[in-house]
Length: 256
Image (cartoon, rainbow, N blue to C red):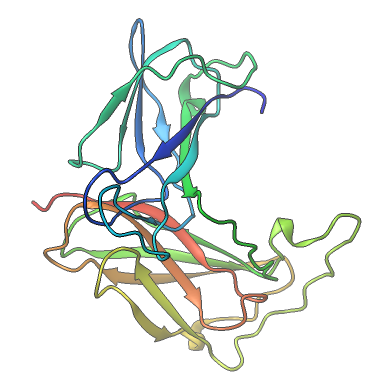
């Protein structure tokens, strides 16, 4: 990838009980001249449950999470990377060695961004190519007991990878909410956060081809939940070939 610096990432559970990590981790970069100022980009993957290194192995948990750290610009020589699964959850510091990637665009201003995305190393899942797209716009950090306001945008357009090589997606037809669908929302990794509701179809309009409609949503973070990573998941209950599940990563911070 042009104009990028990148490193491979692998995370294991070194304890005696299962744990989970979010679809992303917090990363800070340091050069010989001091700490570099890069802002993170949220991911839209699921959290990953890990089997303990010194405990029972379960097919429900992955042996490790793998991923990649990518800046969307060229970093100077990085002498230290600090990686944390979330605020207050500890930090691992290491010398990452030379970065992969190439290009000449330096990391300045709005271009100083990075993405640290994780996925399960145990399997590869072939997903569905939905005929609609779903995006979730939510706060990056929330607190226990807080009510989160977030926005869900539905776009009447196939996901970009849904067309096979050499084929063309058909033009979408207007999308009407008949019958009015049910949706569910959840904070992954947080018990008691799953809820299902009916979409507010009384104020919804049919979505024309390639057009979008945005809905206001709320979800409560249970009080007393431990700080750590989570993924806000939102999905209409219906065929995965029609409705794309929307996800965005967030962090549960300490209360107070």
